[in-house]
Amino acid sequence: MNSITRLKPFGSDLARFDPFWDVDDIFNKFMMRPILREGMEIEPQIKMDVKEADGKYVVNAEIPGVSKDDIHVTVEGNRVSISAEVKQEKETKEGERVIRCERSYGMASRSFTLADEVDQSKVQAKYNNGVLELTLPKKPGSARKEISIS
Image (cartoon, rainbow, N blue to C red; front, side, top):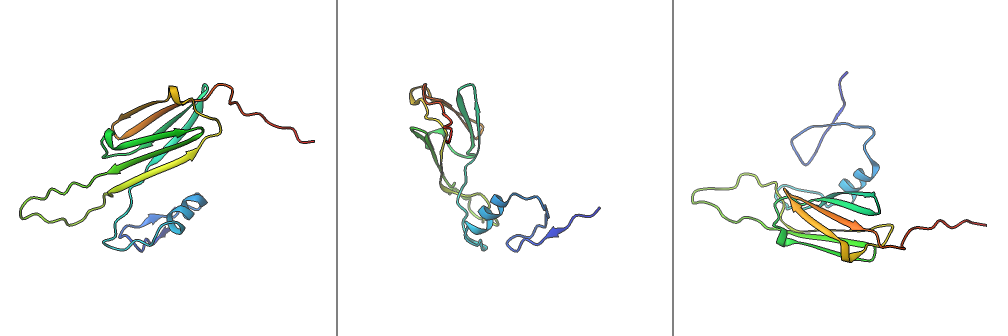
C-alpha cells in the first residue's frame, strides 16, 4: 500500500503523511515558530524525557554539542529550569566556504513544573554524550493529597 506524502514548502524532502500525528506537535511546529526561510537561523532546542519512580523524578535532557560548563540548572520548589549556550565554531580554513549550515547556535532553555516539590539538597546532575541526566528527589512530606468533593 502506498503512503500519502505531503509537500514540505521549506525543504526539498518529502515527508510521509501520518494521520495520527500529535496535535501538540502540529501546534508547536507550525503555530509557535516563525516561518523559516532560506538563510534564517533556527534556535537550538532542548528535548527531554521526564520520568517518576521511587520518590524521585529523572529528567534526561538532550543537549548535544555543549560543554558541561555552559549548562545551567536551577530548581525552585517544584519548578526546574535548564539553560545552555550552544557556541558556534567560527574557524574556517583559507579557500573554504560554507555551503549549508543546519546546526543551530545560541541560547536554549526549558522550564517546567513538577507535581511535587524537589529536595534541592539531594539533586544530582550528570552530563554524558550530549545528554544531561537530572535526578530530582521529592521533598519529604510534599505528597499529593486528593480532596474529596462534597
